[in-house]
Structure formats: structure tokens, C-alpha cells
Length: 498
Image (cartoon, rainbow, N blue to C red; front, side, top):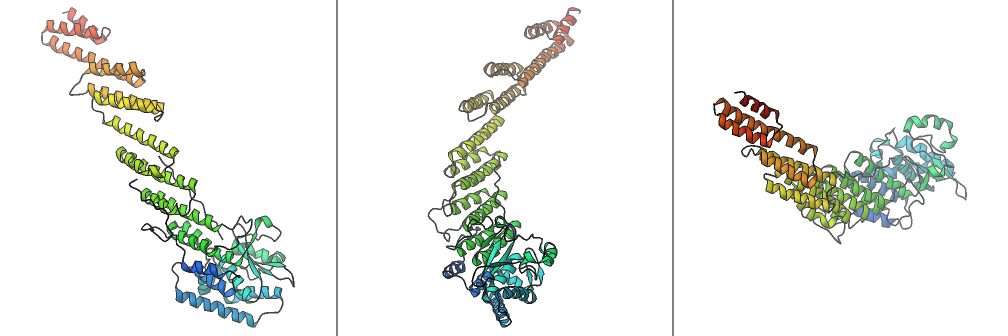
């Protein structure tokens, strides 16, 4: 028997949501989602056990648990008949003592039904068809046959294994372990030959009766329910989460009102197990990038199985993941609309975080779209307002501001304007308001050099064309702006040497 894992959500950096309220599990199941309505047989079987289950009840329930939801009634009927025939054959040769009977049942079962051990073969119907079994399927069949032989039997669980105990006392309770995966598994603690081959056969370690912390008794119906538990674990291992949910629903319905194993850390509480399966299915939707479906699943399943903290984590992950995809697609406006539509399913804290994320994306897109100094002024004002409200971190605000100012200056300095003076003035004005950045200093240095080079080129054109007066005027204007520029100083010397 194997344990299942708990879900993990990917909280990464809505369309209108349909909110389901006051619904029954059978109502308004979103298309493609697993139903939360139990199989009718599960409810019927749960009601049948009021005075305890007979061995025939357990046989029927074990076959249902092995094949639901695609129950083949013909196969089920044939399997049930095989169990009845086996019980009748068993009865014909039973010894008188309870201990002898318990050992005889194990030997009989291995000779008639069990052929080969298969770790994942937990279904009783399959066991009866081909003889392949694991600890759960063999333990359930043994329990059924033992009860048919008049023995008092119950299940035992460990961390990763299941077996059976039978009452072998005379007039008192004296339970003996039965390791059902081994033909020599009756009272395994007293069988040296059993221990020699046990590990090689099943891979499990036997837990002696005195190790109470490592083993726990469970009722017959709880043992049968492990068929569903193992099937659930196998489905989830294969990423078939939608199919696992109905099995968990049926397991909970089957055990409704039954005594749960007291202080048992190994036997999963049916309701808690179902809720985990529900979240695992939701997590599979998130992993597949189906955030809208995940939110619809939360709206449907959340009111039926409330768990405020986990649902908020789940819906927060769904909304956040979708926002991130919008942002990566540079669709901040769509992200804003989605967040507004999703506000009702988010906690105040989650909404604030996502609002800040979307706002940052909006500002980044606005920064990228700047095409003029006027537009830049509006974006810079929005950045300042967001920073003042502590919605945008100061470091990120500085990054955006540096980008906006630098981009705007580059636009002013590029064709068709090619206005070096305006670009430099824009940078100097920004620096006066926000302080200099290394990028701005480098830009001003480059623009001043390019501006001075422009005077040099104009001077050269006039000088080479013999327009010495015009060349002097250009040089005087250039030196007035850039008195230390080495090229212009060289031009002045050249003009003076003419």
C-alpha cells in the first residue's frame, strides 16, 4: 500500500467568473470536471453496515471498490460467484480450532486464488481473474474468507503495508498476525523461514505486534477502503487527477458514519483525503496553464468543501499565474481587466500584491510607448505617484524613471529632430528633479560630444569652401557652447594660421 502526495501550487510572477453558491455536489458540474456526487452504491453500502458487515457484504463491496466507476456487472457477478464458491469449498475442509482455521484459510487462498505478487495490483476482481495480488487485495480476500469460516478478523496498517489479524483465542481475544502475501505468513513473528524470504517477496518489512507506534488496527470496511486509496495513488502517479477525485468521493461516502481508526497516523481521514484530491486536481489545472478552469473549479468545489486558507492560496495562484501570462504577452490592459474581475475571490493582501504587479506592468508598457517629452512627463508623474503610495518599490521606480528619461532624450537627439540641445536640456532637467544617474551622465557626455562634432563639421564645410567669415561665426558659436572642446580649439588654430 502506498501513500499519496499533497498538492503543491505554482505561485508565479478573470475573465468573468461564474460563482456557484449553495449547490449540491450533483448540480452545475462545470463541463470536463469530475463530479463530487458519490456513486449510489457507495451510499447504499454505507447504510448497509449498521449492524456490521457480513463476509458477503465485504465481498460485494470489495468488488465494487475494485471497479467503480466503470463497473462491469457481468464481471462483478462472476467474481462474486467465485468468492462464494471458494467459501463453500473452504468450509468443506475446515479444521476445528480457530488458530488452525486461520492458517488453513491462508494456505487455501494461496493454492486456489493467489498466483504471483504484483506491488500495484490492489483490485480484488483482477486477483480473481488472473491470480495477481498485492498486500491490500490479498488481505481483503483473506479477511472475507476468514469471516466466511467463522473467524473474527480485522485489518492492520503500517506506513506502507497492510495485512490481517485473526482472533485465535478461546473465549478471549488473542489476535494473531497474518501476512497474506506469503503462503507461510500465518503468525510471521514465530516463523524463521518466513523472515528469510519475506523481504525478497514483497519488499516490505514486517512490523511485530509490540511496535504499536508503527502499526495500527483498522476495521474490515476500512481495510476494504484501502482498495480505493491505492487506486487513487496509482491514478495520481500517472497524472490522472480528474479520475482520482470520484474515487475519493466514493471512499468518503462508503465510510460515512463508520468508526475511524483511533489515533491512526496511517489511515487517511476520508474527508481530508478527498479535499487533498480536489486540490490536486486543481493544481493539475494550474500546471496545464488553465487558470480560468482552475477558478471555476474553486468556485464549484470551494463552497462544498470549504478550507479558507487553502482555497485562497489556490485562487491566488490561479489569478497570479494568469496575470503573469498577460504581462509576459505585454497585455497589461488585459491583466488589469482580469484582476478587476477576480477581485471578489482574492484576499485583500493578495489583491494588493497583484495590483502592484499589474501597475508595474502598466508603467513599463507606458514607458516603452513614450514618443515625446509630453508623454514622458505623464509617465514620470505616474511613476512618482506610485512610488509615493508605496505601491512601486523605490528601486523599480528609479529603473523605470532612468529608462523613460533616457529614451525620451534619445528621441530628441535622433532624426528627424536631431536636437542635441533639447536632449541635453531634458536630461539636465530630470537630473535636477531626481539626481544624476550614471546612464544620464554618459548620455549627456555623448550628446555634448556629438553636438560639438556637428559644429566642427559645419566649420570644416565652410572652411573648405573658402567661406572663412562664415567659418569664424560657426567656430565662435561652437566655442561659446563648448569652450574646452579640443576639436574646436584645433579648428581655431587652423583658422588663425590661414
